Length: 334
Image (cartoon, rainbow, N blue to C red; front, side):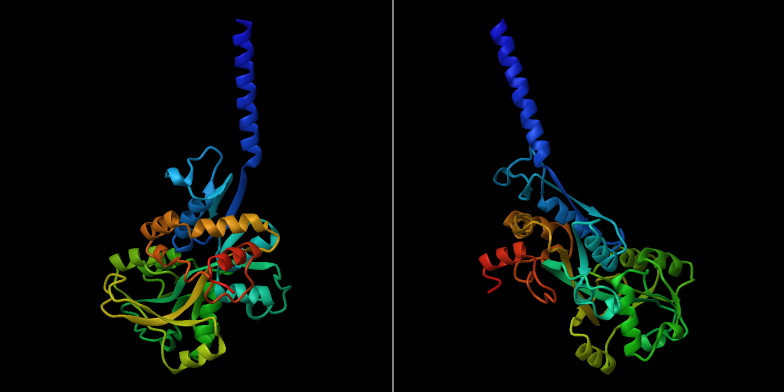
Protein backbone atom coordinates (compact mmCIF):
# COMPACT_ATOMS: atom_id res chain seq x y z
CA UNK A 1 0.00 0.00 0.00
CA UNK A 2 2.79 2.33 0.89
CA UNK A 3 4.44 1.55 -2.45
CA UNK A 4 1.22 2.50 -4.29
CA UNK A 5 1.05 5.72 -2.32
CA UNK A 6 4.66 6.46 -3.22
CA UNK A 7 3.99 5.82 -6.94
CA UNK A 8 0.89 8.05 -6.76
CA UNK A 9 2.91 10.82 -5.11
CA UNK A 10 5.61 10.53 -7.75
CA UNK A 11 2.97 10.65 -10.51
CA UNK A 12 1.35 13.76 -9.00
CA UNK A 13 4.74 15.42 -8.59
CA UNK A 14 5.65 14.58 -12.20
CA UNK A 15 2.34 15.97 -13.46
CA UNK A 16 2.80 19.13 -11.39
CA UNK A 17 6.33 19.51 -12.72
CA UNK A 18 5.05 19.03 -16.26
CA UNK A 19 2.34 21.65 -15.77
CA UNK A 20 4.86 24.07 -14.27
CA UNK A 21 7.22 23.48 -17.19
CA UNK A 22 4.39 24.10 -19.64
CA UNK A 23 3.38 27.28 -17.80
CA UNK A 24 6.96 28.50 -17.92
CA UNK A 25 7.23 27.78 -21.64
CA UNK A 26 4.02 29.62 -22.55
CA UNK A 27 4.55 33.09 -24.01
CA UNK A 28 2.10 35.71 -25.22
CA UNK A 29 2.23 37.69 -28.46
CA UNK A 30 -0.14 40.61 -29.08
CA UNK A 31 -0.87 41.68 -32.65
CA UNK A 32 -2.36 45.15 -33.17
CA UNK A 33 -4.92 45.09 -36.01
CA UNK A 34 -7.55 47.76 -36.75
CA UNK A 35 -11.25 48.46 -36.22
CA UNK A 36 -13.51 45.40 -36.04
CA UNK A 37 -15.34 46.44 -39.24
CA UNK A 38 -12.18 46.50 -41.36
CA UNK A 39 -9.96 43.79 -42.86
CA UNK A 40 -7.01 43.87 -40.42
CA UNK A 41 -9.06 42.48 -37.54
CA UNK A 42 -10.31 39.23 -39.16
CA UNK A 43 -6.98 38.63 -40.92
CA UNK A 44 -5.21 39.29 -37.61
CA UNK A 45 -7.40 36.64 -35.99
CA UNK A 46 -6.43 34.12 -38.67
CA UNK A 47 -2.74 34.91 -38.21
CA UNK A 48 -2.97 34.73 -34.40
CA UNK A 49 -4.56 31.28 -34.63
CA UNK A 50 -2.00 30.12 -37.19
CA UNK A 51 1.09 31.08 -35.19
CA UNK A 52 -0.26 29.95 -31.79
CA UNK A 53 0.46 26.52 -30.35
CA UNK A 54 -0.35 26.57 -26.63
CA UNK A 55 1.24 23.97 -24.35
CA UNK A 56 -0.56 20.65 -24.72
CA UNK A 57 -1.79 21.34 -28.27
CA UNK A 58 -1.93 18.56 -30.85
CA UNK A 59 1.11 18.40 -33.09
CA UNK A 60 0.97 19.96 -36.56
CA UNK A 61 1.37 16.58 -38.27
CA UNK A 62 -1.57 15.21 -36.23
CA UNK A 63 -3.93 17.91 -37.45
CA UNK A 64 -3.16 20.43 -34.71
CA UNK A 65 -1.74 23.94 -34.88
CA UNK A 66 1.41 24.44 -36.94
CA UNK A 67 2.37 27.46 -34.86
CA UNK A 68 5.27 28.20 -32.53
CA UNK A 69 5.36 25.75 -29.57
CA UNK A 70 4.18 27.47 -26.37
CA UNK A 71 3.06 30.66 -28.14
CA UNK A 72 -0.36 32.18 -27.51
CA UNK A 73 -1.02 35.02 -29.98
CA UNK A 74 -4.02 37.35 -29.82
CA UNK A 75 -5.41 39.83 -32.34
CA UNK A 76 -6.17 43.15 -30.63
CA UNK A 77 -8.57 45.75 -32.12
CA UNK A 78 -6.85 49.13 -32.53
CA UNK A 79 -6.89 52.45 -34.39
CA UNK A 80 -4.87 50.98 -37.26
CA UNK A 81 -1.42 51.51 -38.73
CA UNK A 82 -0.14 54.57 -36.85
CA UNK A 83 -1.49 53.36 -33.51
CA UNK A 84 0.04 49.91 -34.07
CA UNK A 85 3.48 51.32 -34.91
CA UNK A 86 3.41 53.47 -31.77
CA UNK A 87 2.26 50.50 -29.66
CA UNK A 88 5.10 48.32 -31.02
CA UNK A 89 7.59 51.11 -30.39
CA UNK A 90 6.33 51.53 -26.82
CA UNK A 91 6.20 47.81 -26.04
CA UNK A 92 2.39 47.61 -25.73
CA UNK A 93 2.24 45.21 -28.73
CA UNK A 94 4.72 42.62 -29.95
CA UNK A 95 3.63 43.04 -33.59
CA UNK A 96 0.99 44.76 -35.65
CA UNK A 97 -0.45 45.54 -39.05
CA UNK A 98 0.69 48.61 -40.92
CA UNK A 99 0.26 50.04 -44.35
CA UNK A 100 3.54 50.00 -46.26
CA UNK A 101 3.56 53.80 -46.52
CA UNK A 102 3.08 54.33 -42.78
CA UNK A 103 5.78 51.77 -41.92
CA UNK A 104 8.23 53.50 -44.27
CA UNK A 105 7.50 56.96 -42.87
CA UNK A 106 7.79 55.75 -39.29
CA UNK A 107 11.05 53.85 -39.76
CA UNK A 108 12.72 56.69 -41.69
CA UNK A 109 11.20 59.60 -39.73
CA UNK A 110 9.79 61.19 -42.91
CA UNK A 111 6.34 62.08 -44.26
CA UNK A 112 3.79 61.45 -41.52
CA UNK A 113 6.65 61.14 -39.00
CA UNK A 114 8.37 64.40 -40.02
CA UNK A 115 9.52 66.20 -36.87
CA UNK A 116 9.06 63.11 -34.67
CA UNK A 117 11.72 60.60 -33.61
CA UNK A 118 11.99 57.86 -36.22
CA UNK A 119 10.88 54.37 -35.13
CA UNK A 120 14.27 53.04 -36.17
CA UNK A 121 13.71 49.56 -34.72
CA UNK A 122 10.57 48.89 -36.78
CA UNK A 123 11.10 45.68 -38.76
CA UNK A 124 9.12 43.77 -41.36
CA UNK A 125 7.86 40.21 -40.84
CA UNK A 126 5.83 39.93 -44.05
CA UNK A 127 4.07 41.83 -46.80
CA UNK A 128 0.58 40.32 -46.68
CA UNK A 129 -1.77 41.62 -49.40
CA UNK A 130 -2.67 44.81 -51.28
CA UNK A 131 -5.02 47.24 -49.54
CA UNK A 132 -7.35 49.07 -51.88
CA UNK A 133 -8.26 52.69 -51.31
CA UNK A 134 -12.06 52.88 -51.26
CA UNK A 135 -13.81 56.18 -51.84
CA UNK A 136 -17.47 55.45 -51.13
CA UNK A 137 -20.15 58.03 -51.95
CA UNK A 138 -23.92 58.22 -51.69
CA UNK A 139 -25.32 57.48 -55.15
CA UNK A 140 -27.31 60.75 -55.10
CA UNK A 141 -24.43 62.95 -53.84
CA UNK A 142 -23.17 63.88 -57.33
CA UNK A 143 -19.65 62.59 -56.71
CA UNK A 144 -18.04 61.02 -59.79
CA UNK A 145 -14.39 61.88 -59.06
CA UNK A 146 -12.18 63.05 -56.20
CA UNK A 147 -12.50 66.64 -57.44
CA UNK A 148 -16.26 66.46 -56.78
CA UNK A 149 -15.64 66.14 -53.03
CA UNK A 150 -15.25 69.94 -52.79
CA UNK A 151 -17.79 71.29 -50.30
CA UNK A 152 -19.08 67.80 -49.42
CA UNK A 153 -19.30 66.09 -46.04
CA UNK A 154 -16.43 63.61 -46.16
CA UNK A 155 -15.06 61.26 -43.50
CA UNK A 156 -11.28 60.87 -43.75
CA UNK A 157 -11.09 58.14 -41.03
CA UNK A 158 -9.96 58.68 -37.46
CA UNK A 159 -6.74 60.32 -36.25
CA UNK A 160 -3.90 57.82 -36.06
CA UNK A 161 -5.10 55.80 -39.04
CA UNK A 162 -3.14 55.33 -42.25
CA UNK A 163 -6.35 56.04 -44.17
CA UNK A 164 -6.39 59.64 -42.95
CA UNK A 165 -2.85 60.19 -44.24
CA UNK A 166 -3.63 58.71 -47.65
CA UNK A 167 -6.91 60.60 -47.94
CA UNK A 168 -5.03 63.89 -47.41
CA UNK A 169 -2.46 62.94 -50.09
CA UNK A 170 -5.21 62.06 -52.58
CA UNK A 171 -7.16 65.27 -51.90
CA UNK A 172 -3.95 67.27 -52.37
CA UNK A 173 -3.25 65.55 -55.71
CA UNK A 174 -6.62 66.84 -56.93
CA UNK A 175 -5.95 70.37 -55.66
CA UNK A 176 -8.04 70.03 -52.50
CA UNK A 177 -7.22 70.38 -48.80
CA UNK A 178 -9.15 69.41 -45.68
CA UNK A 179 -10.49 72.98 -45.65
CA UNK A 180 -12.09 72.45 -49.08
CA UNK A 181 -14.34 69.67 -47.77
CA UNK A 182 -16.45 69.39 -44.63
CA UNK A 183 -14.19 66.84 -42.93
CA UNK A 184 -15.18 64.31 -40.31
CA UNK A 185 -12.90 61.77 -38.67
CA UNK A 186 -14.81 58.53 -38.21
CA UNK A 187 -14.15 54.80 -38.51
CA UNK A 188 -15.72 53.30 -41.67
CA UNK A 189 -18.61 51.63 -39.83
CA UNK A 190 -19.48 54.94 -38.11
CA UNK A 191 -19.19 56.82 -41.43
CA UNK A 192 -21.46 54.21 -43.06
CA UNK A 193 -24.05 54.76 -40.30
CA UNK A 194 -23.94 58.51 -40.93
CA UNK A 195 -24.37 57.88 -44.67
CA UNK A 196 -27.46 55.74 -43.96
CA UNK A 197 -28.90 58.71 -42.03
CA UNK A 198 -28.13 61.08 -44.92
CA UNK A 199 -25.55 62.95 -42.82
CA UNK A 200 -22.46 61.91 -44.84
CA UNK A 201 -21.73 62.32 -48.56
CA UNK A 202 -18.57 60.21 -48.86
CA UNK A 203 -15.88 58.44 -46.88
CA UNK A 204 -12.42 57.00 -47.43
CA UNK A 205 -11.40 53.54 -46.35
CA UNK A 206 -8.13 51.70 -46.98
CA UNK A 207 -8.38 47.93 -46.76
CA UNK A 208 -8.76 44.68 -48.61
CA UNK A 209 -11.97 44.20 -50.52
CA UNK A 210 -14.67 43.22 -49.81
CA UNK A 211 -14.74 45.36 -46.63
CA UNK A 212 -17.54 44.36 -44.26
CA UNK A 213 -18.80 47.86 -43.45
CA UNK A 214 -19.01 48.78 -47.15
CA UNK A 215 -20.60 45.48 -48.20
CA UNK A 216 -23.29 45.91 -45.53
CA UNK A 217 -23.94 49.52 -46.53
CA UNK A 218 -24.13 48.67 -50.26
CA UNK A 219 -26.67 45.93 -49.55
CA UNK A 220 -29.01 48.45 -47.87
CA UNK A 221 -28.41 51.73 -49.74
CA UNK A 222 -27.40 52.88 -53.21
CA UNK A 223 -23.75 53.87 -53.05
CA UNK A 224 -21.02 54.53 -55.60
CA UNK A 225 -17.41 53.42 -55.48
CA UNK A 226 -15.65 56.50 -56.86
CA UNK A 227 -12.65 55.87 -59.18
CA UNK A 228 -9.31 57.38 -58.15
CA UNK A 229 -7.69 57.84 -61.53
CA UNK A 230 -6.53 60.41 -64.08
CA UNK A 231 -3.42 62.52 -64.73
CA UNK A 232 -3.45 63.71 -61.10
CA UNK A 233 -2.94 60.11 -59.98
CA UNK A 234 -0.10 59.52 -62.46
CA UNK A 235 1.74 62.47 -60.92
CA UNK A 236 0.96 61.22 -57.41
CA UNK A 237 2.43 57.77 -58.24
CA UNK A 238 5.73 59.31 -59.30
CA UNK A 239 5.94 61.24 -55.99
CA UNK A 240 4.76 58.49 -53.62
CA UNK A 241 6.29 55.22 -54.79
CA UNK A 242 4.55 53.11 -52.10
CA UNK A 243 1.23 53.54 -53.93
CA UNK A 244 0.30 51.16 -56.74
CA UNK A 245 -2.61 51.19 -59.19
CA UNK A 246 -5.36 48.75 -58.31
CA UNK A 247 -8.77 47.60 -59.51
CA UNK A 248 -11.84 46.66 -57.48
CA UNK A 249 -13.56 44.08 -59.72
CA UNK A 250 -17.17 44.54 -60.83
CA UNK A 251 -19.60 42.85 -58.46
CA UNK A 252 -17.36 43.18 -55.39
CA UNK A 253 -20.13 45.27 -53.82
CA UNK A 254 -23.85 45.19 -54.51
CA UNK A 255 -24.76 47.61 -57.29
CA UNK A 256 -21.16 47.84 -58.56
CA UNK A 257 -21.67 47.04 -62.25
CA UNK A 258 -18.15 47.82 -63.52
CA UNK A 259 -14.50 47.52 -62.48
CA UNK A 260 -13.35 50.58 -60.49
CA UNK A 261 -9.79 51.86 -60.87
CA UNK A 262 -8.15 53.01 -57.66
CA UNK A 263 -4.87 52.91 -55.71
CA UNK A 264 -3.49 50.46 -53.17
CA UNK A 265 -0.79 50.18 -50.52
CA UNK A 266 0.65 46.98 -49.03
CA UNK A 267 -0.71 45.53 -45.79
CA UNK A 268 2.31 44.48 -43.75
CA UNK A 269 2.95 42.61 -40.51
CA UNK A 270 5.65 44.49 -38.59
CA UNK A 271 7.47 44.07 -35.28
CA UNK A 272 10.35 45.42 -33.21
CA UNK A 273 13.99 44.56 -33.94
CA UNK A 274 14.34 43.56 -30.26
CA UNK A 275 11.95 40.58 -30.63
CA UNK A 276 13.96 37.31 -30.41
CA UNK A 277 15.27 36.04 -33.75
CA UNK A 278 14.14 32.46 -33.10
CA UNK A 279 10.60 33.58 -32.24
CA UNK A 280 10.14 35.68 -35.39
CA UNK A 281 11.75 32.92 -37.48
CA UNK A 282 9.20 30.46 -36.06
CA UNK A 283 6.30 32.84 -36.64
CA UNK A 284 7.35 33.51 -40.25
CA UNK A 285 7.79 29.80 -40.90
CA UNK A 286 4.32 29.11 -39.43
CA UNK A 287 2.69 31.72 -41.72
CA UNK A 288 3.83 29.89 -44.85
CA UNK A 289 3.27 26.33 -43.67
CA UNK A 290 1.14 24.41 -46.19
CA UNK A 291 -1.65 23.81 -43.64
CA UNK A 292 -1.66 27.49 -42.63
CA UNK A 293 -1.91 28.59 -46.27
CA UNK A 294 -5.06 26.48 -46.70
CA UNK A 295 -6.58 28.03 -43.56
CA UNK A 296 -5.83 31.55 -44.84
CA UNK A 297 -7.37 30.81 -48.26
CA UNK A 298 -10.54 29.40 -46.68
CA UNK A 299 -10.79 31.99 -43.89
CA UNK A 300 -11.04 35.33 -45.74
CA UNK A 301 -11.19 36.72 -49.27
CA UNK A 302 -7.76 38.30 -48.76
CA UNK A 303 -6.33 35.18 -47.14
CA UNK A 304 -5.49 33.52 -50.45
CA UNK A 305 -3.27 36.52 -51.33
CA UNK A 306 -1.03 35.91 -48.29
CA UNK A 307 1.59 33.82 -50.09
CA UNK A 308 5.31 33.27 -49.88
CA UNK A 309 5.67 34.81 -53.35
CA UNK A 310 4.27 38.18 -52.18
CA UNK A 311 5.85 38.11 -48.68
CA UNK A 312 9.01 39.99 -49.64
CA UNK A 313 7.52 42.39 -52.22
CA UNK A 314 7.43 46.15 -51.60
CA UNK A 315 9.34 45.81 -48.33
CA UNK A 316 10.19 49.51 -47.75
CA UNK A 317 11.72 48.82 -44.31
CA UNK A 318 14.34 46.25 -43.18
CA UNK A 319 13.25 42.68 -42.43
CA UNK A 320 13.52 41.33 -38.90
CA UNK A 321 16.56 38.98 -38.82
CA UNK A 322 14.30 36.01 -38.00
CA UNK A 323 12.05 36.67 -40.99
CA UNK A 324 15.04 37.38 -43.22
CA UNK A 325 16.60 34.03 -42.29
CA UNK A 326 13.41 32.18 -43.21
CA UNK A 327 13.06 33.97 -46.58
CA UNK A 328 16.69 33.26 -47.45
CA UNK A 329 16.19 29.57 -46.66
CA UNK A 330 13.03 29.62 -48.80
CA UNK A 331 14.94 31.21 -51.69
CA UNK A 332 12.94 34.45 -51.59
CA UNK A 333 15.82 36.72 -50.55
CA UNK A 334 19.47 36.68 -51.57
